[in-house]
Amino acid sequence: MSSHSLHVQDLTVSYRRIPALHHVGFSLACGSAVGVLGPNGAGKSTLLKALAGLLPIETGRITFHGREMKGANQEFAYLPQREMVDWDFPTTVRGVVEMGRYLRVRWWKRFSQEDRLAVDAALEAMQMTALQDRQISALSGGQQQRVFLARALAQEAHVLLLDEPFTGLDQPSQEGLKLVFRQLREQGKLLLISHHDLGSVQELFDQVLLLNGELLAAGPVAEVFTQENLTRAYGTRVFSKIDHGLAT
Amino acid sequence: MDWLLEPFQHAFMQRALVACVLIGFLNGFMGGFVMLRRMALMADSLSHSLLPGLAVGVLLFGLAPMGLFFGALSAALVVALGAQLLARGARVKEDTALAILYTSAFSSGVVLLSFVKVRVSLLHYLFGNILGVSNQDLWLAYGVAVVVLPLLVAAERPLQLLLFDSSVARSQGVPVTLLNIGLVVALVLTMLSSLQAVGVILLLGLLIAPAATVYLLCDSFPVLLWGGGALGVFGAVSGLWLSYWLGVPSGACIVLVLGGLFCIAYLVSPRYGLLPKLWKARHFHKESLARWEHHH
Image 1 (cartoon, each protein chain N blue to C red):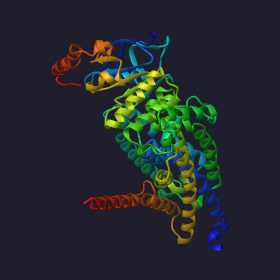
Image 2 (image 1 turned 30 degrees about the vertical axis):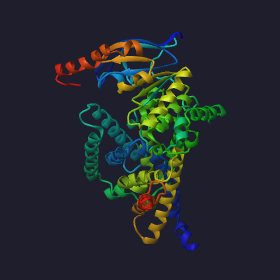
Image 3 (image 1 turned 90 degrees about the vertical axis):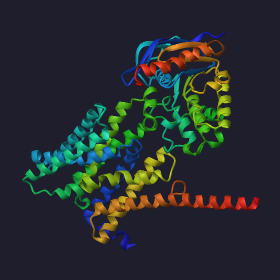
Image 4 (image 1 turned 90 degrees about the horizontal axis):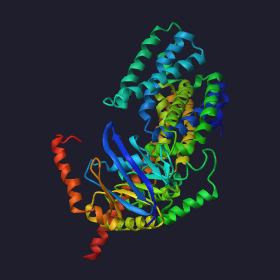
């Protein structure tokens, strides 16, 4: 049993001034894949973005290996939803992966041998070496996800935050991505993955965070992913929506 | 070869040539940032808002270049920052705010210029005259190039992160706000250096067209910047040369050449052009028909 390395205490986050997550607390160990589940508007993306430092936090603290994470850092890598990326940007697969090293290299300095090797290794690990000179719009959905994973690897990030990575992928790409996640987990990375397909939770994740504006349950899939908890997360949501006149 | 070099035997054409090289490169290089940051509309607004600044400059200091420079600079900065502030109100979006701000600024420029006692033509500021650039104008363009280009080159990697995904860049520690302001200031300086040559209205063509053309031909950020600069020089010099022989206004001729080059790239670019795409679709269609017939 490895010691827990990511601690979140009493985290409250607002999205456009409206609190979207209330007093969330959990602890997670490295080397695991964690599913972030909950109905639409439950705060899945908000949680990932807050961890990535993309949204300001109102209360609470986030610590990683005992160090408080405040603002910008290289330990966490956020992988945006695919439709949020400008795929026509003039860059190649290798170009995107190199971006993971940009902040390790001083602005005016050239890439070192070490940087190049890190980029090579990241491309190799994600099986993108053969496609490294492709423009990024000329890739399949699964390949596009792997490019951003490779960028996170080149950045030497330890916590990978993925926003709905399986959305819009065909079956073979989904299978490929599952294998990649298993491999990253074995390397000791901590993956937090927001996900909406409840049917594949058991094969994908070893831990689950169940959200609905607050944290309803957290822990191993076998303990937390129960009918009772799901009813609490998805069932109550229906009523609360009606109560608030469907305001989201 | 005489026909090629003859225009440049005149002193005013030599000065115009130097101006073309300097501002062609500056604008072409800057254009890549403007396009990827989606600042084209903002650039348009800024260029129009230079006019009231020029008018105030003329009213206060006469036609002294430094007065014009600081007048235009402050007007552009007021509009740029004003748009940001107005857009903070959330319901009115930035493009709407800019449209109102810059037409108002432009109109106040027109009104102010009518009060100016010095003989100064509105047309001159609208369309510029590259044949009339003074040595001071050239020094200004040179100074801007020497300050702006090395900074943009030094910050190329963080700027690329910002342009690719500004929110992720911010979370990783890229000084996003500082770089954004830096880009706007660089843009305004670039415009000021080109004002005398191409005027308020045509500025935008010289700024955007080279980068947009190269964008259709390459998949590399550095190539976009340097290629844009090179194409800007080529377009400006050949436009100047053509205008000499055709006896037409040089600024318009330069923008037309650049626009023409963009159209060619739009049609025939191997990867992103219209014609290769149509040809590929046709080819694919024929192939699949043939395969179908083969099977049956």
